[in-house]
Image (cartoon, rainbow, N blue to C red; front, top):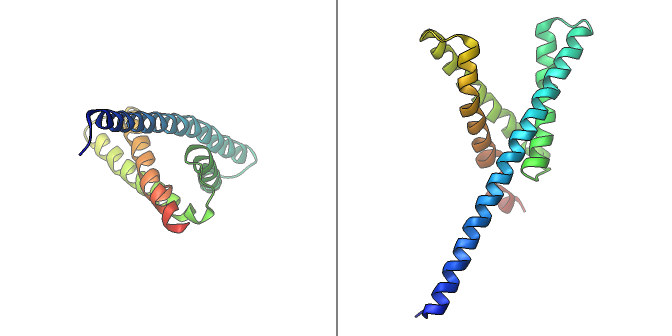
Length: 150
């Protein structure tokens, strides 16, 4: 049986753990948002350079997307989730494929409801970023996977 003092000590440890996990989560989300902004600038920069190097827009977009996803994997893995395991690339690509398909589906639905594409995409950005973070956290850079593969 626990004494009142040991129960109070246990509760304090539980609350410290919860507070620490909350801080870690907020820091990770903040890093995810900053890295996302850097990734967006990088991807657009590659697209812009390829376009001005004479590539047709579709080819520039395709190549910039491939290079951008590889760059995003490195920055997201290293800076956000502190993970450098290259075997997770395919799961990372799959997550972005799922987010893209859902985004495209919702964008088309919003347009059918009469919203303009720019406004609709602006409204969908936050939910897609949140979904991307949650899927990457759960399926690509999960701590549980690190324990299993160690």
